[in-house]
Length: 146
Image (cartoon, rainbow, N blue to C red; front, side, top):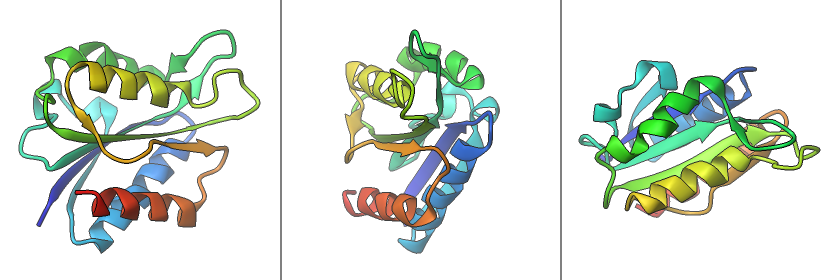
């Protein structure tokens, strides 16, 4: 049974809801799933025995890309994570009326690639309220790429 870790940072609850939908889709594909708020995960846990680590983060800011506040310390420490050669994926929630719609997703994915993680599938950018069916489908696609 493949083992996955989903780490999310959520302020309004949208990214948390999306993370729950991703977890549901992976469980439906017989994955063992750990779902953790970013405040409850350590850098040492990332990549430690997981077949995939999935990151979820919302984006704030109109003048520049701003990651969800709780996610910033993890993002700043990703170089210390044991993710080189490990499979990862990224999703996030945002508002398409902002200049940098879901820019946190791009920033996280870019940093993961720089440290040698293997990004699986296309990232998911959710505009506004999470739509269950679309997120479940994305999670299913990620699961099938492993």
